[in-house]
Image (tube, rainbow, N blue to C red; front, side, top):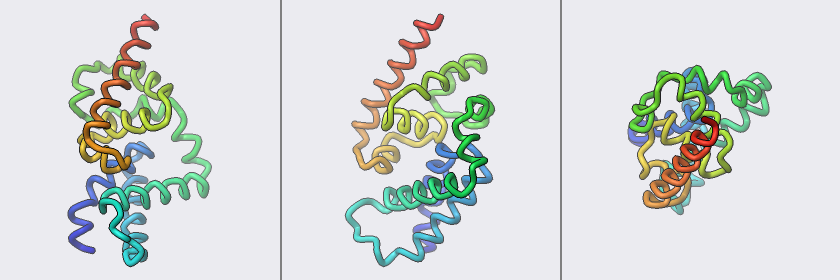
Length: 162
């Protein structure tokens, strides 16, 4: 389990960070994720990649945290939470200036389901397309194509709002 932790702790942390946007809470949830993975490691059937399995556990832990603590469920949905998230730098964020980030995050929130999650994983989490594909049970090409589609929708909305 030690090798698994060393190999996957950072990707799981980044994934959870995209969900909670709070480094401290993401660390706690990462620890809880690996604790539960240790407890349930015999149930892992190998039908998916280890990272996918760990991220699914992490997502479950995240949802439990929201149910337990109302504070997080409201904070996670507030726009000020997105505006204060300027500590992450990814290739896509280089082209954004500080003022433009807020508008882009607002547009991202309007995207539907998987596309929104993919955009958060890439832009806020800084995950590679391969990692995103693994987490979402898809492939790297799917992640690239849908990221492009999401980016195009955001650009279109930004032009309409000018």
